[in-house]
Image (cartoon, rainbow, N blue to C red):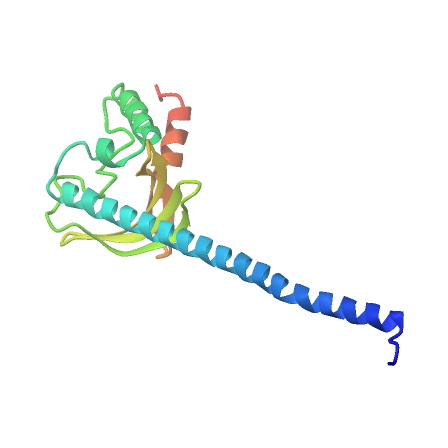
Amino acid sequence: MKKTPLFITALLLMLSACGGQKPQEEKVETAVADTAATASVATDSTALKAKAEIVGIINKLYAAASKNEGDIDGRFACHVWRDTVDAVNAKDAQLEEIGFFNDDYWTMMQDSNPDDLEARDIQFEQLDVAKGRALVDFVLHSSIQTVHMKFLFCRDDADWRVHDIIRFFDDIDGTESSFSFMKSMQGYLSKPLEE
């Protein structure tokens, strides 16, 4: 009987041990990949749910506005928006002429709203469900006018609510510009009343 040197036996044992580890590493990598895929699907599902909810809010808002229903702010805007609008209205109550608001900021109409208001081309520019923020671009269409707008949404009392309205308009040279109602209101409130 031929004796196998101790060195070769040890080498064979080490090789078989290394070969035994490879399937275990593959199992761990597969489990990590499966967990990441599950988390990605859950995140996609949460984002899709949030998008559907926000689109539904926009549609409900403009359905209510087209019927000239009251309390749009109370139903669809966050606390910060409502408090800021209340502060602007309180400041404007001291004026004899028209104050900050010259039209319905939701529809850009000065009189009653038409009954065919419809948000079209709704696109999400930003969505962070974890932070409760979304920026949504859309066109508000009616038989009277078409207005390009964006809503900045936030989570307020566990619901998606409008935090800011960004309105677009054409400059004299034809380029499109925009302004944030929230920033404009805050700037207006920071200035003293003109005597």
